[in-house]
Length: 109
Image 1 (cartoon, one colour):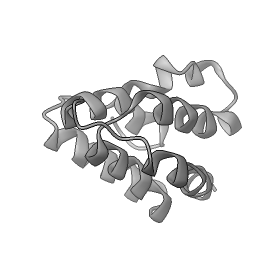
Image 2 (image 1 turned 120 degrees about the horizontal axis):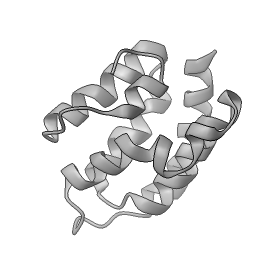
Image 3 (image 1 turned 120 degrees about the vertical axis):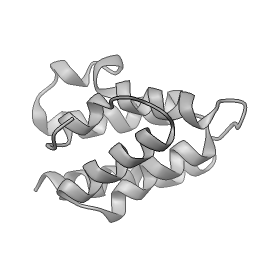
Image 4 (image 1 turned 90 degrees about the vertical axis):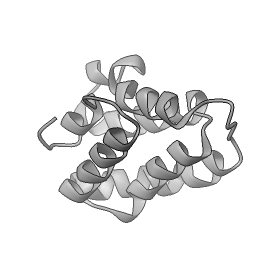
């Protein structure tokens, strides 16, 4: 069920995110924002059912790097652990030591 919620949120955000990119923000900066989105957006204090939507809304406003947005958008094609693994791998490629969003998605951080 958690994967389906991420799928719907990512697909809904796809159109909005596609037009909002600015490569002046590095991939690392964009991924750092995505990884911190649960806390920065306030989603950490929301009900579990609302968290994915809150994170997606926050990401579409704050992340402007095209490659990082693509990583986030791709969550719509993945479910459960695959989505968490996808974000963790992108965070690693960006040189981030950890990605708290992965824990929100139900996988080990």
